Length: 497
Image (cartoon, rainbow, N blue to C red; front, side):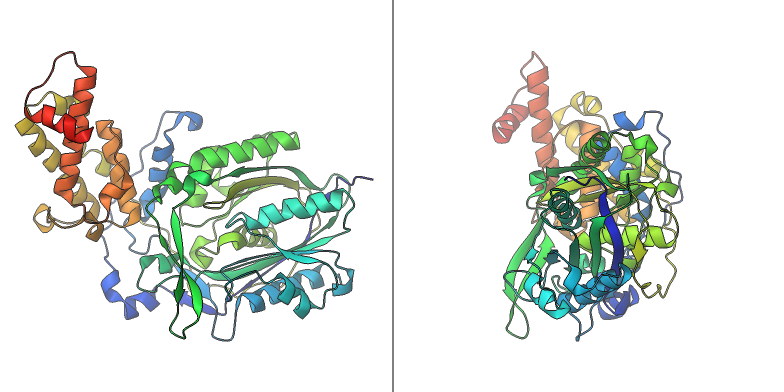
C-alpha cells in the first residue's frame, strides 16, 4: 500500500568546533584585504514586475550591499579542529537525529550519506558511518554537490512510499575548509558542518507534497576540483574558482523560479500559499536573489551565511533547523526548500511540516553579524555610455570615450583614483570574480555586446578590453548599417570574425 504522508521526523546539525572570524585573515594574510570605502546611496526602485526584471539586475542588486565589505559578507565560519573530520561530524549529527526521533540504530531500515570533500579520496563515508553507529541496514553514498540533501530526501521518500523500507536516515556533510588554499580569498567563504534527518511516516496530510529536480550542466566549470598532495604527502582535493563562474549568477534566477514553481505545481498549491522558504545560501546575498526572483518577503526566509559561511549541502538542513528552532516554522506550516548544486542539480521540495524533533542547539556565534553597508547602484550605474553614442562618434573618438567610461567605472567601484589604475596591468590584479562579473554586466547592459568573462582575467588588461569592445562595436555597426565603414573598422571586423 502506498503511504503519501512521509517526511522529516527529526533534524540535527553538527559543526566544526573552531569558530574562525575575519580576524584570522586580517592577522595572517593582511595583504589579501583591500578595504573599500562605503558608498551611501539607496538601491534603485524598479517599476518593473519581478517576473520581468533582468536576471542580472536581480543578482547585481542583491550583491550591491556587500561591495564595500572586503570579506563580501563573511563574518564567521565553523572549522574542524585537528581531531575532527567529516566522519566525526556526521556521527554527531546522525546520533543526535536518531536520539531526537527516539529511534535505535537497530530500527533504522536504510541510511543514505552524502559526504562532500571527505578526508579520504575515493568512495564516501556510508559504510564507515554505519559501522560507527552500529547499523545493520543497507548504507550507501549519494552525491549531487549542494543539492545532495534534497536529492537524498527524494530517494528516501520514494523508497519508503513504495514500501521498500520503513524509514531512512539521511546524513550530509561538507568539509570545505580543507579543500581551499588559505591564501585564496575563496577560503573566506568555506565552512565545515554536517546535518542529519530521519525520514519516516508522519500524520495524515503531512510530509513531502511535491518535488522538482533539474540538471545544472550550464554551471560546469564554475569551480575546479583538482587532486593534489598536501603537506603530509597525502592526496586531497583542492578547489578553486573556474573560468565559468559567471554562470552561477547568470542561471540563478531561472533555476530558482523553474524549480520552485514546478514543485509548487506538483504539490497542488501556489507559491503564495507557502509559509516559509529555506534556500541554500552559498553567498551572503543568495537568499536575497531568491527572495527577489520569487517576490517573497524577508520574513519568509532565513540567511545563516554570516554565521556559518558556505557549508554546501548542509545549508538547507541548517536553515530548516534554525527556522524550526526559532519558531519560524511550526507544525503544518507549508515549507519550500530550494538548493542549487554547481555542476549537478537544482532542486525544490514542498512539504507540510510535521511535529519535527530537533537535536541539540549548536554553539552560538561569537560576534553578531553586522548589516552590510548600503551601496548605491545608482551611483555606479550613472557612469555609463550608450552604444548609439559610441557608434555616432568617429573611430578616434570611440577609443577615448571607451577609455574614459571604463576607467570611470573602475575608479568609482574600486574607490581608486584614475591615476592609480595602470591600463597595462592585468585586470585580474584589480578585480575579484564578483567585481569582474558586475563590470561585465555593466558593459553588456550599456553597450549591448557580449563579453566573455575570461576577458576580465588572465593576462588581459584594460587596453585588451578596449580593443575587444571596439571590434564588437565595429561588427555591430556593419551588420546594422547599409553603409560600409572604411579602413580601421574593416580591419576590426576581420579581427573580430
